[in-house]
Image (cartoon, rainbow, N blue to C red; front, side, top):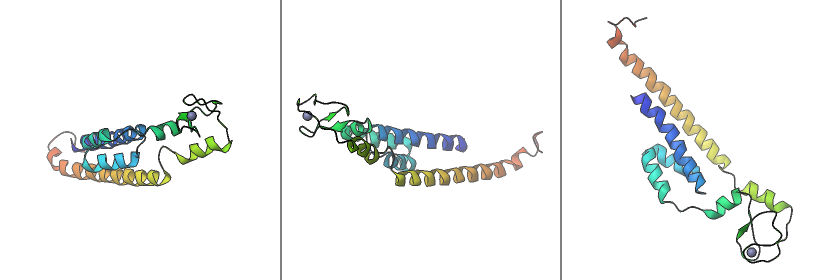
Length: 144
Ligand SMILES: [Zn+2]
């Protein structure tokens, strides 16, 4: 039963992280909140966050119009909001792609550490549980 709860915990934490990332917010913060306070609380906390439209637009490869600051397609020659002509420095789209990764390198390291610690605890818990369960099974046919 404990193992089942533990096995559900981590995937649910990742769901909360993905939910936060989809809102253009920090998936790492969402994951940590869900991991520490329960996925349900993490989900509620992330649900209260506002969606960051700028981050989502940048991730979709959109570029900012220099005149009106609205996000437009990178191939556009005329802004669809203000009708001004758009100049395309070649580096702009690459720069945007690098500046808005889904998860920062630091975040990946933190997530990896949390996952490893969690898996170690899970293995430890399953070992302890099997040790506790062994005396109870002595009478059954399952003893090896
Ligand atoms: Zn514009």
